[in-house]
Image 1: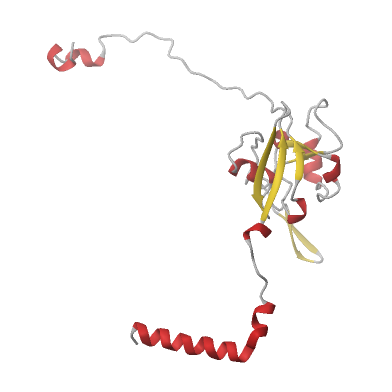
Image 2: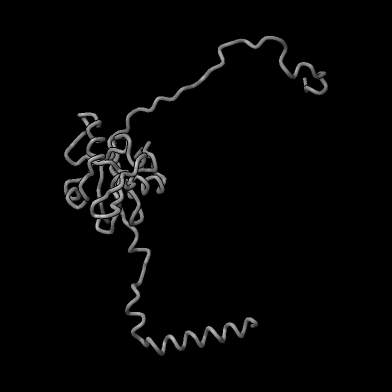
Length: 194
């Protein structure tokens, strides 16, 4: 079949489909819009500045912040957090999934009072990790950004991001003297450019 023959065939198939389902066909297919998948979040940093980020339904709060280009929330979790820790295989058997999810309180955030009840409760692992948050930073609204999974119901969420702990960086310096001539000194001055 040539291109026009394929087009004719598919036109006939589409026409038959419309006759069979009539105008009711579109009523059964939900309309999907990007705006239905976008969640706006306000992050308050330790200086009091507001940062509005947008994330997709299903992302973690940490992922939305990172993908928006903000470096407010840090994380060292395996798999970026927000992962499942167990899978229910049958009513009698739940399989543990090891090596996934949050491993430290580095992504600690404080959820505002008006939103704390709208977020699903922390699982046992998150609660254990939150016990490592410094006492001065911990509140009853403390959560891990890697474990807050965005839903459309969380559109407008307000979260405070405490100052992140300092991160040590190491600079290695060569403290020994090089012996012998510099490697380029074996070339004549005309080549070296002296």
